[in-house]
Image 1: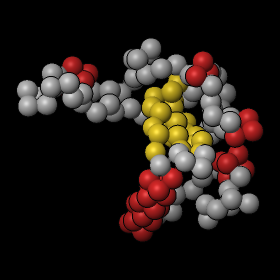
Image 2 (image 1 turned 90 degrees about the vertical axis):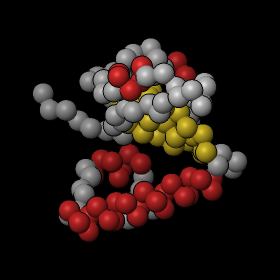
Image 3 (image 1 turned 180 degrees about the horizontal axis):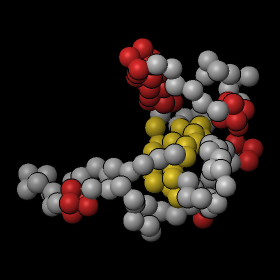
Length: 134
């Protein structure tokens, strides 16, 4: 059976409900460097945790006038995505992320070649091929 990749888009652009996702601690991430995750924090920075590394193939943004929330998840076969990270940012930071991500995509495509996305991604997110909404 072919695997269909689809972006997770909550109905009516509402934020995903907490109970619709598993929290990162509930299921062990598949590609976390466990040795690094188990390493104690440096003595000069007590209470500081190492960053978490995870794979994400599910993404959604919910934004309001004052903030945006980026949801990074992992799609597992026929189930709802597992939430790997929920990151809250200001609208200004969201724009900075978009600009920097666009810069990196352009540099990658200049060096390696175009990245193509399935038509269903553009349709599901209601964006044109240039990244702007309809």
